[in-house]
Structures are given as C-alpha cells and as structure tokens.
Amino acid sequence: MPVAKRTVDDFLAARVKNAAPSPTLAVSDKARALKAQGIDVIDLGGGDPDFITPQHVRDAATAAMNAGDTHYVASNGTPALKKGIAAKLKADNGLDYDPSEIIVTPGGKQSLFAAMMATVEVGVEIMLLEPAWVSYQSMVELAGGTVAHVGLDPDDNFRVTRERLEAGWSPAVRGIVINSPNNPTGRVLDDAELKALCDFATERDLLIYTDEMYEKIIYDGRKHVSIASLPGMWERTLTFNGMSKAYAMTGWRLGYVAGPRGLIDEIAKVQSHSVTHATSFVQAGGVAALNGPQEFIGEMVEAWDRRRRMVADGLNQVQGISCATPEGAFYAFPDARATGQSSMELADRLLQEAHVAVTPGVAFGDAGEGHLRLSVATSESILEAGVQRIGDYLGWK
Image 1 (tube, rainbow, N blue to C red):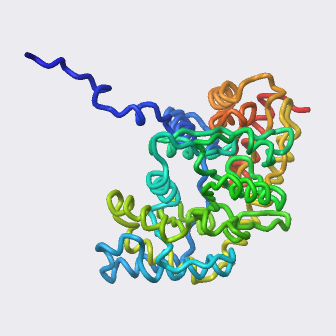
Image 2: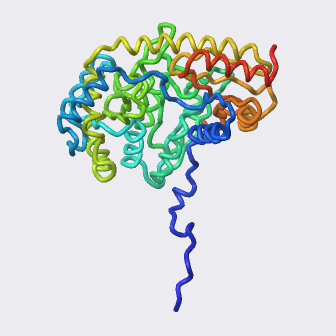
Image 3: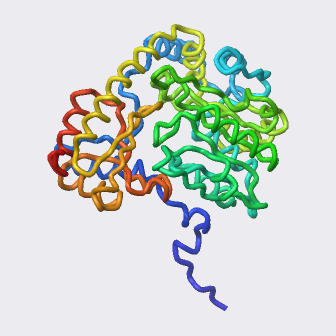
C-alpha cells in the first residue's frame, strides 16, 4: 500500500519547530536588510564589542596556526588553556578547580547548551530569572525540559527576592539560571540577592547555572561575586564564562564551563559527540589572553562607562522614556511603558521610521515588556546619533 507523502514539517522535531529564532539576531538581520536598500540604519541591537582583539592575542593564534597547530586537540581543551582558566578562576573568583573539572568550548553559548543537554530532560523544569538572555529558554526546551518563568519587578529594579523564587518553584524544578552582570538589564546581583539564591537553592536542592560572561564589565566600584565561591555552593554550581566580551573575541568562539567532576564528565560527552573541541589555534589565543597584559580590559570598560552614562542621560530626556544607568555589561534597558506602545511595536517603529535598531524587551521574557535593549558597545558618535533619532521621533521632555 502506498505511504502518504510527508511534508517538510513531518521530518522536523517538534522541539525544534517550537523553538523561537534568536530575537537579537533577527533585529540585526532586519537592520542589514534595510542597509542593503541604501537606508542609513543605526544598529544598537547587537552585543559585539567594537574593539579589535588585542594584538598579542592575535599574534599568538597566528603563530600557533603557522606552526602547524591546525589539527585535533583534546576534546575538553588544551592543557595550557585549561591550566590558565583554572588559575584565572582561583585568582579572580576564589574558585578551586582542577583542570579536569573544566571544559573549553567553542563559545560560551555552546558551554551552556552542552550543559543543558547533559542535565535537562523531559519532565524537568529550569527557573529563569527574567528578563533573561534570549537563548536560555530555547536551550532548556531543545534539551526536552520546560522553563519556570520568574518575572522580576521592573519597579523594584529587577531585584531577586525569596518571594519571587518561591512563586516560581515547583517540585519539577531542577535548577536556576543566573546571569550577573545581567543581559539585558545591566543589573549586578548584590549580597542580599546572592544570599536569597544560595538559601533557596540549598533548601530546594537545586543546581545553579551561573553565566558570568560580563564579569569584567562592571561599574561604580561594584564587585562581581561568583556564587560558587559562597559556602555550600561549589558542589551545586556550574560556572560559565568565556573570552568573547572581556577580550573582544566574540568571533573567535571560545568559552568554558567549570564544575564538579561528576557533572563535567557528563557534559564532556555532549561536547565529544557534537562539536568535538574548540578550534586548536584559537585556544592558543585564549592562553595569551589570560596570561598576557590585562590593561586592555580596563580601557574598554572606561569607554563603555562613558557611553552608558551618555546614553542613559540622553534617553532620560526623551518623552515616555526612563532609563536607569546600567550597573554592569554594555546594555541600556530603558523603560518605555509610558509611551503606551508594546516593546515590539515601538522597536519596529523605531527601526522602520527612525532607522534605529533596538531589541524589544519582551524578547527577554514577559518581565521585559515595555522596555528596549540598546547596546552601548559602539562609538560615542553613533550612540549620540541613535539617541538623537529616538528623541526626535518620540519627542523631547
């Protein structure tokens, strides 16, 4: 008997069909499309440092490639880079990891994805503190799990509280994703928030996934604290980081995850059966980044410090906009609820009519509705022009 012909959809897994494309990449794609039509678009939607990777890092990778370091290496990373990461975690974060408890990955996103694949399955819920980076939810869902949405209050500066955590908990919850400094809000977790998270995770026996990619980008004397360094947290924490933001190495795709050996060994299986390993000569650049001069980071942060203030000050002069000065990372997250427009409507109008690309806050969860995300990782002249266009479009106070 003939078999009914399948459609393309019949060949696709539901978990993939149901996954939303990255909203931040979608904004950049729309901006590029308008630029291709000859329209002058100011793109503030991305998260790519506007600085070139330091010379000594580029030189190290080039030298390694020219020396023939173009072949397979150990799946979990080269010994030199894992040693450098272990030393960094000890010096900067007070974390003791043996190199065998570290996996080097092609980008911080891949380390998170591999960890979700290793620890999440059907019937498991992972709590997301929202607004949250757009890929967390899709990662959980692609691994077969579901998300427990924990909406933080914009009128309380998106603070994490025990009450909010309890409201999002269910017996199916296995872990919590935290991100500090936060993308998109720019918030840095304070001691009270960290204590609430530690107490809650310990009492509920939960795993912590802590994304610390922006740890070096922090302002006004604030300090980054790795939650795994706090009492009783090391054994229940996976720490994720990478070279993308602090060393302006986004295109190099170099990240890592550190955690207890029992978890790391299982995550390593996912890496070995998927991407194999991070690029060989790129890892030589990573060694140079960690072991070489660090002044470059401070120079970038000084520039982003000036820009975040300039953008916040400028947006606070715009009708219907209120913008807190970011505490960390390189994003502004202005509150546009007073405009009476949804974040999607406003972002689309700003792109189509003012020719400024921003990311709608709802892309980061319902708690982000009414807000916009703007990257300040671009030149001051571009940022000034972008704010000017937004103000001219919405009106000035």
